[in-house]
Length: 567
View 1 (cartoon, one colour):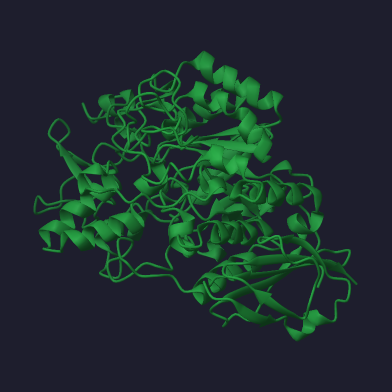
View 2 (cartoon, one colour):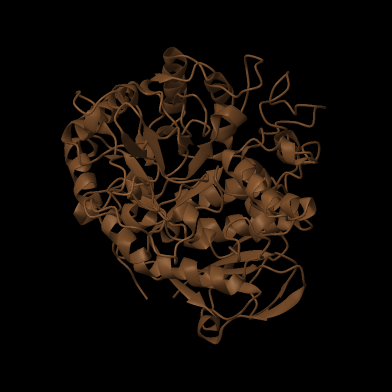
């Protein structure tokens, strides 16, 4: 099989992105909160890892109801993170080290403290009145429709001054922007131009698939969970592509950017519409399908374990659908997800499974995203008390489950498995007692209790650590066009222990990836069609033990091997 690559002019295609959650990365001013100077201090570390881009979670002014995704001023920075001069310095240092920076763009909603909303809520006839989504009560005086919000309760809040409800798909403090209003769109584009002109290299666009709403605001049926019932009229709405094409035309086309859209409730077919280069919208989107394969009867907060066959099916669908049209973003974890090792790997075989998860991700076609700490194999945090959790989503679930009479033991288990705080624990830079080199004072969120064994300093001292495996994977992506361009093919979809796939470039270069997702040692017979390749050689082995190809491979627990060959 061969494939052509029409994207080779785009720098982001061979790039590796590293996600920084600023408040948990590195504190330099002794307030327990990470800051921009902390990121500057760690640029040499990130340069050593080899990443090309830093994605920063929101650094704007915010009341921090939802960890910065409630923005009160798009032009001001959160003073806890630093000043505009600090950010300018960060941009300069990063660019001097050939590292680009993209910002989170949160334009589906703002904080209720934003000046736009403060004006909009006052009356129906001022300049900002139509910047947000307002609806009259239903004829019986009830809510405008039956939509619920992600963080609990209805998606509507009443404001007496207007005698209307405003929409909020998340927290009540996050009112929804009205993209139907041309003045609002121009205000957003002006803000985007400001940051791109400032030197920012692109945006990760928060829940961008929700910006267009059906104007009839239909009730949701019972196929949607209450907390996601707004999908009925807000997901991939009728004008979303029109709005993004306008954004591209007026802003993005004038800059050499990376754009990635967060697109919940979006299929692979819909993703093509967002990312096909000929449509001039976004470079790539985040696929959520593989994030849902372990959802149970209670949705996300459940103790169901994923099945490898489901994971392969979902990843393969997205690899195949976006091969010729569009582009994939590749990720295991981020600030909204549990740690990859605890979810898709094994804490018993932490190092081994972390390496194999890295191998699989970085050998797929697309742009890989590494969440901070993933490169040292961080795990979920086993907090001793439910009161240790800070995340608004987790606290809401704890409250709901307690009211339902579920045991504290079960609630602790699902919080440990699924809480967003698992990803948000401060970065452990060393094993120093108490605060692991993150800060000299008590951090805003508890450290992961295992920081004395899982930390950056330990990883850098160990030549066989997860860190150095990731470093090798990144280097290979930069060196081998087949990793960037090669066509993907899955083998043995029903094998529930081994993930086997190939990547093949136009010149006949092929990669064979064999990855074990089990704690067993087993023999694996390479599929017959691949045995004819007599030139296989080992490219990278997570155990660093295999030095040559065999048709029958003995695989240790969570071992992965990549072979390279050519006809």
